[in-house]
Length: 129
Image 1: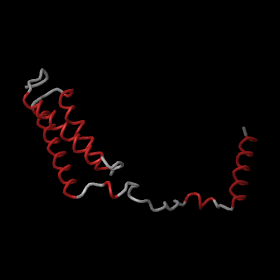
Image 2: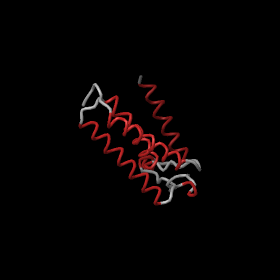
Image 3: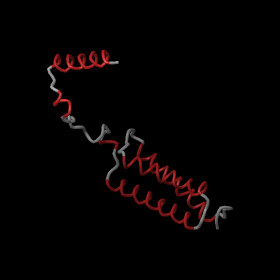
Image 4: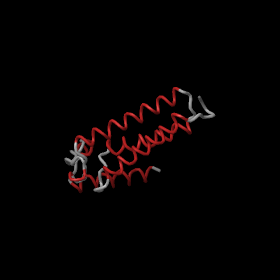
């Protein structure tokens, strides 16, 4: 065991000294290169009015999920609305406007979520009232 330790220590010292890097330099945090916010083209990002509309519709879905939870509706029912809300939130949060049709797709997704929300508001569910 002792000879392996000596060999390992000797090897480590040779690597450190041979590379010209002192041990204290390994402990110092290396500066990270400045990164752009994202690689998304600005031409595909929504304008401020559309982004406001997306945020408002997302907020309505969030409120609908809370109302369904308060009514005691089963999780497998209200989760149907929460999925659409989460999709829109993540696209905004991560700035995922990768395609020229991204804005249209987000608005379409929110409309589908609103449709599910409206259906669930009027339906009676075994898991709740």
